[in-house]
Image (tube, rainbow, N blue to C red; front, side, top):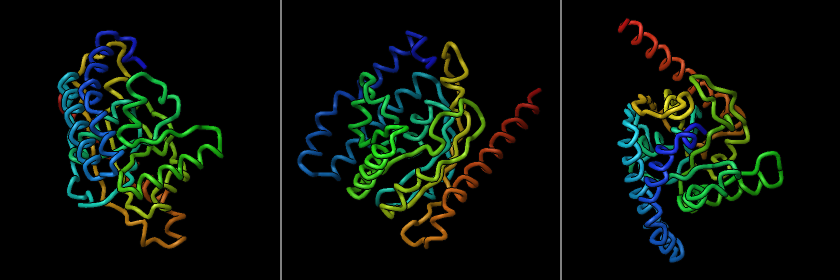
Length: 255
């Protein structure tokens, strides 16, 4: 990750995580007491402060549209394309005021600060290449959703590191269909310009986010469930193409 080759910016980001880490005990206490509503509120509040700090540190511009499509209540599975590490920051901003956890690769579990941070916000680690362990992770995610906590998943399985999109993995959608919670598709463009395309992170990236209408999985029949991967992939992919074309057209106008 280029961020950590740039020591000053790496230090800045780790310090920003400290804003959240100071309040982990408070969140853990709410969890142990079984007060999930308070836990969700605390996670949303402190991640909100953290993401605002990161946006200021790196001088980011995040253009958000479609917030009116967000369900008012209850847990959701937010499904997004995955351009870069900056997607996490972008999604916290786009979904400001809501608790969200992430489905993350198990390699991140042992990263200082971040592993504990992901667990604290109700994220779920998944072990790639191990079907049995992956199924356990999916069930853990379903249980998390049933407890009222929302999750984000990137069905591509890895970062694209640019303005393109790999095929979505169908298994990623089992979380929502098994828990019978809404799926909210989200399109992101430009986040790769924060960490993936620069050897020295100078900031100033402009990132576009589109939140699409929610899909009620509880009302889907078997045929619709079988087609859900294609439907969401097409929604996100089509919008990504439009965002790329708009950005290219704007760049030409400036020439």
